[in-house]
Amino acid sequence: MHRRGFLTAIPGLAFGGAAWGALAEGDADGNARPRYTVSAAQLRQAVARRFPLRYPVPGLLDLTLLSPRLTLLPAQNRLRADMAVEAAGPALRRSHAGTFEVDFALRYEASDRTLRAYQLRLGRLDFPDLQPAASELLNTYAPTLAAQSLNEVVLHALRPQDLALADGLGLQPGRITVTEKGLEIGFVPKPL
Image (spheres, rainbow, N blue to C red):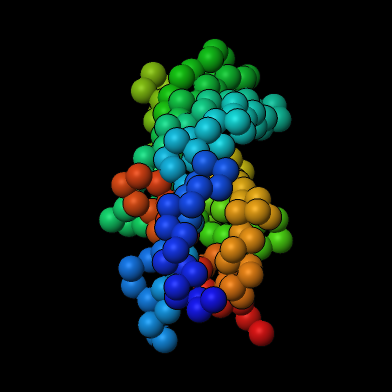
């Protein structure tokens, strides 16, 4: 069967909660390429399973990151994670609640078929009731906290059957686009 005819015959075929479809636009040869979508709800569930996370800074404080609230940022092709943070330890004398914000892009990792957070940008780390010196101490650790908490966090794992169609066509995941409803994964030819 001709590749284009095959692809246009399968729009909307669902696999594991994500959907396959044919893109309206084609590649340089005019052939339509499949796409794979991941809903915002699927992303939120995957991230929630990885929290809370605890990060001790020996002798100073312990930070606990609670499950983040993900926001899709289609205009920037990124996601933002807003999460509650609890800080406690000898340097702070008591427990303090705050918020932490970071945004990130996504990449595909072929070795385990996952979508991962990368290119993290720290937005803010805010503890309203902390003294300036203690707040400065926490902000010193914020970039490390961001890197450890979300860098390379798996947001979605593709199963072999999710990629079977694309694999059979000699394609692999390529561009990941953040949309209002979730993610759309485009496909590119596999390298020779």
